Amino acid sequence: MTHSNKLFSFLGLYFFIFIAAHHVRAETMPALENVLLNGFPARQDELAKTTGMLLQEYQKTNNIAALVFYSYGMLRQANHFSTVNDFIHASEYSKIGFFYLDEAVETHENDPRVRYLRARIDAYLPADIGRCVVALRDTDELLNHQQSFDASVRNHISFMRYRALYSCRQYEQASQLLVRLKRQGVKSPGSQDPMFEMAPAWAMSEVNQILLPLVKGE
Image 1: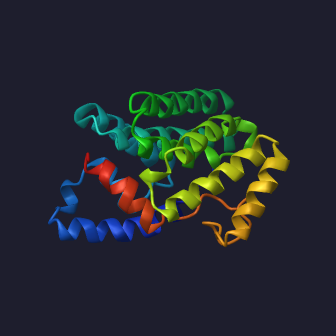
Image 2: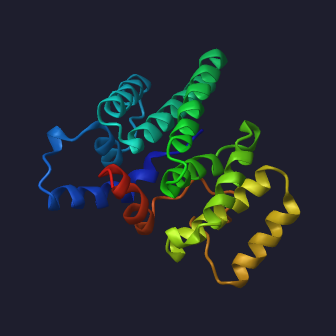
């Protein structure tokens, strides 16, 4: 998985404003808040340390967002090992990342925000990883509970579903969905064709409706 830290650029700015408004001291921020502010470290040793801290934070606070981002950190490490041809560790870290990502949803199956985070991760993974099936199931469930989100988030769910359909080689259904979205005037969350975009930066609606409430334990 090759998500860049640009995913956190907008979120970091917004979260900095949130922290300042709530008088939170930066040096005492938990691991999750540091990741949201600064993104995951690029260096493997620092990435491993940060990921471990996220797991410790989840074990201490039981904050489900910490578990999701721990899973994300494990998948980023799996990607690192894959790029250096260490496929044994890549497979091991990938399995752990997906295990805890799935557990997060299974233990919070009635919280669509947690399912949304899993769908966002899975929808932008390479097709050969095979998580498009999970993303299809999640986006179907999310679209059946559209009242939980505003139009902006619902549109993002639809584009995640498009990507999942395409990755699962359901090309006709993917094309039909994309045509329908374009007719409705819905723009891709990314700047180009949604099939070739990396995961886009967090939108304000995602921050307000999903990330910050989960971080605050709401």
